[in-house]
Amino acid sequence: MSPLILIVEDERDLLTTLEYNLEREGYRTRTAATGREALEQASRQPPPDLILLDLMLPDLAGTEVARKLRIQDATKEIPIIMCTAKGEEIDRVVGFEVGADDYVVKPYSVRELMLRVRAVLRRATPGVVESDDFDFGRLKVDVPGHRAWVDGEEVRLTALEFRLLVTFHTRRGRVQTRERLLSDVWGYQAEVTTRTVDTHVKRLREKLAGAGEYIETVRGVGYRFRSRPEGGDT
Image 1 (tube, one colour):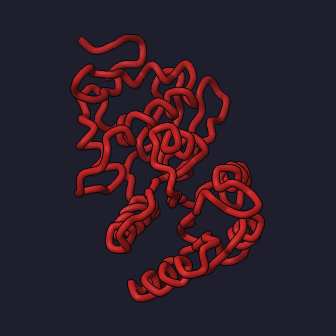
Image 2 (image 1 turned 120 degrees about the vertical axis):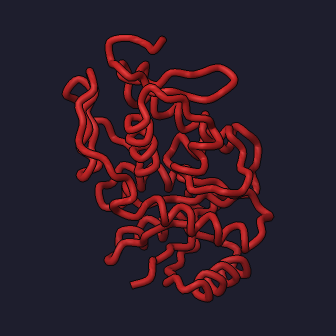
Image 3 (image 1 turned 90 degrees about the vertical axis):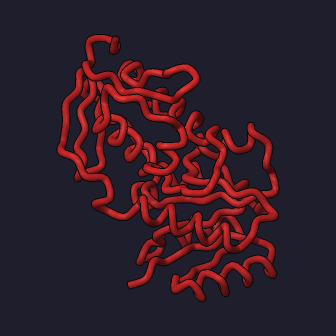
């Protein structure tokens, strides 16, 4: 069955345009015009495979909707693409911090949005990340279960953060450029700001607490996951 997209948008003309273009691409759609309606629609069965979330809603801010989605078991794993006229760096950072998987600034081309939808759905598909469970110092990861623990305490990671962590671990000891991570983790072939990578790595380190030091910054190049938990690479 084709993926189901929940469109959260209070501008009727834009909502209709998105609905038409997504269905033309073969997706099923569900719509909401307010934040509260979005939360209700996201919890319905079957759950959406992806949510297009406008930030400027008449009742709840889109960031608050995203926060609520991320703390509910039924919706915490659903990928979110935020769509907004706010394009400043701080707005993007806040969006990613509350759990967005991607961030599109209006006005955007419908073609670009369709490409981003396809990329987010592709990386959210079960089985995309292939790896065995692993224990690495203070970190333990159950890959099939998409769960991670630091010092025995479970850490809540978004689907993208989890994919980023597993990608780092499978390539431990090797430097990963931001461009390579954008391609392999985000699924972007077109040019996208590498600030996206920095924001997610920062957020992942914070969530991993003491184990966040396993992800090292290689100045001017990118990032590297330690080859051994007890010390850095030489």
